[in-house]
Each structure stands twice: as structure tokens, then as C-alpha cells.
Length: 328
Image 1 (cartoon, one colour):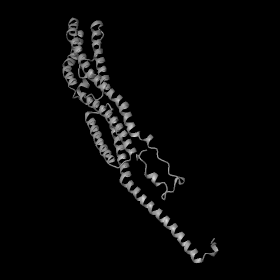
Image 2 (tube, helix red, strand yellow):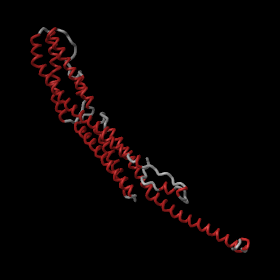
Image 3 (cartoon, one colour):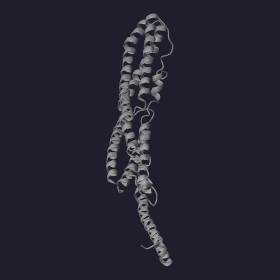
Image 4 (cartoon, rainbow, N blue to C red):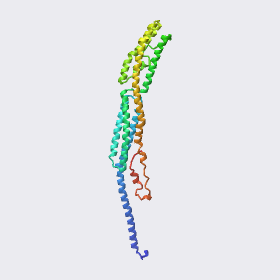
């Protein structure tokens, strides 16, 4: 057995230098291997991960813009020009969303990413279908051209009540001699003032408004004539005016108000269906599209030293997430 003390100094030094050289070689080879892996990971970040994150962020931003525009369509105070501007904004965001999605689809993906992408596209398609249904209802509102259905219905109820009151005032005058003031000027009542400023492209409402003007004027004109006839002692003539002219004019006015009210009720029904769909199915589908990946994208824990040495720590785990949603 050779003892260490018997080994010459030159051999000891040579063996020590050889051991150091082997250690340096091992460290160098490990470093070269790590640098090559790091280079590939860095290239993946620059060419795949970061562009993918940018595309997904763009998709998320455009989805939020579409959601905001869809919510704005629920305002009953929008005119048709503002609605058209919102339609244009939605279409613009959809085109930007489509471009970002195509960019993401062109990137290399793992089988897990492909599976998640297919599920996401199905969810996004359901959201788009629901939003399209809301837009169709909104365009129906445009065709009806009733800006505030609830407000118009309330106004029509007020107009009907005003003219019923005047009709009752005239009847009490004829029956008991109870005097009243006003009522002879068709432009002074609530309906007359509204009629002078209201504008719509709805053909049925326009037709009803054109036809109601003459009877509305007649209704108020006869009210003044009846009051004058009573004041001058011409009671029988006042009764004939009431039965022969005022009652038919009132029926015509109320009939045309009912026609306008029917259009307002139809618009109100469309608006309510649009609100229910937008805040129900469409909103649920959109939220699922935006927030859906969160439960599925749990980030893996960094690789521990006990699991094996990495020359650059836990970077491969940090760089290898399978689903790079920026908002996860």
C-alpha cells in the first residue's frame, strides 16, 4: 500500500492541479450549459412570451372598452347619433381585439395552451353573440326613435289627464254653472307646448301628431266657445257645442295619444329586454371571458434546491408559465 508520505511532492502538486482543473472544467461546462439554456429562454421571452402578454393585454383592454360601450347603450337619454358613435366604437374595438387574438394564435403554444385557447375562444364567442343580441335590440330602438320611452309614457299620461280635466271643467260648467279659467288656447297646455318642440323619425308617431293637431286645436277652441256661450246665456247652444264638437274632438285626441303611447310602450319593452339581456346573459358571458383564466392559471412554485441544482435559480419556472395572462 502506497502511503501519501511516500508520494513525491511533484506528483502531489500535479494531482492537485489536475483536480482543480477538473473542478474548473465542470463549473465551466455547467456555466456554458446554463448560458445556452438561458439564451433559449431569453429568446422565448422576447419572441413568444412578451408578444403573447402584449396581445392578451390588448384583448383585455378592448373587451373592457366594448363592455363600457355596451353599458352606455342602456342610457335612455341617448339620441341616435350618440348610439351610432357607440356602435362605431364597439366595431373598432372588435377589430383591434380580432387582430390581437390572431397575433396570439400565431405564437407557438404548448398543448395545454392550445386547449385553454379553444375554451377561451368558445367563451368569447358566447359573449360576442350575447352582445350582438343587445345591439340588435338597440338598433330596434333606433328604428322606433323614442329616446326615453318611460319619460314619453309619463308625459302622455299627463297630457291625457290635462284634457280629461278640461273636459270635466266644461261639463261642470254646463251642469252646475261652475266657472273655470283658461283652456281656450291649444298652445298653452302641456301637450301643446310639448307638441311644438318634440321631434321624431318614427313614422307612426309622426302620422299621429300630424292628425291630432286639428282636433286638439278644435278641442280647446270649442272649450272657449262653450264658456262664452254660457256667459251670454246661450245654454242650449253650449250643450250642442259640447256634444257635437268637443266630445268628438276629445275622442280623437285621446285616440291619437293612445297610438303614440303604443309606440312608447313598444320602445319601453325593447329597452327593458335590452337591459335584462345586457345585465344578465351578456354581462355574465363577458365577465366569464375576462375573468375566466384566473382559476386556471395558478403559478407553479419556484423549484427548490432540493429538487435539483439550477445554475440560474428558479428562472426556468418563472419563464415557463403555460398561460401568460397579464392579469392573472
